[in-house]
Amino acid sequence: MKQKIQVLIVDDSAVVRNTLADIVSADPRLEVMATAQDPFIAADKIRQQVPDVITLDLEMPRMDGLTFLEKIMSQHPIPVVICSSLTDKGSRSAFKAMELGAVEIIAKPKMGTRTFLEESRVRICDTLCAAAKARLVRIAPQRRIEPKLSADAVIAKPTSHAMVRTTEKVVAVGASTGGTEALRVFLEMLPADSPGIVIVQHMPENFTRAFAERLNTTCQVTVKEAENDDTVIRGRALIAPGNRHILLKRSGARYYVEVKDGPLVSRHRPSVDVLFRSTARYAGANAVGVIMTGMGDDGAQGMLEMKQAGAYTIAQDEATCVVFGMPKEAIKKGGVDKVMPLEGIAGMVLRECLV
Image: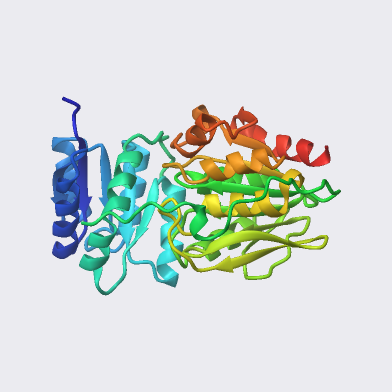
């Protein structure tokens, strides 16, 4: 029998600990190794048995979650999923957690936490299973399952007629688990006059703005959280806001984005499939698609549609992915033209945009 994934739950709230424990215990893939109300108790539990994955709150007594995370990742890296309330201040803390090596963020509300966690049980369990397989590196110290909807729920399938080629190209990028670092590497390698870029990174609401602002300070291209009707222009990367879908649209020679609400697609909002399908429909052969590290299959069908519409499509390779889920599924569907290491993607994008 396959051994279950061992989960350590660290949270100062007894309600959260008990609710997460119930959710984890109900999944046949997972098992609660232990629970802890603060990092000191968690450290004792880890000395007795090393878990496969940890859920970690950021605000706790005696030692905050960030300090504990840094100690874990610098001494004995273990996959960590942050489960915390994200206010404006908290979103910066969550971004710091990703920099320190956290695999994923699950945002919980300040009120109604039990109900939220119960409704999010599928995502929580899938996240923990994927996180347990994540590739980590040691850092220097510092109940009812909703139907899985396709992009049909937001945008109709593209026609069979690919868009006529133009001189301006657009780049559509999708990423999830491990994507914050992958996107940083990719964007920092691009020159200031790069083709316009639209990005979906699976992130909680209130987190994407801080992420975009941080990237904007280190990249030659301008990086911003997308707003409805933003024009896709050279030298600018637009990142979909957390909890909102983003679609590429075209009016004459102008490409722009539509930011909208809608149902979860491939269990995500924003969804990579929604971005890729709209890119296939409105850009066709004028687009380059990139799918990066992430769990699940969001983006696989959309990338196939992009390729069928004439776009050039690239997937990050397994060796450089934190989780080789999304790229693997896109490759399996036959929607990928080129599989390559993260460090080579920016150069390939630029070359294809000159064709």
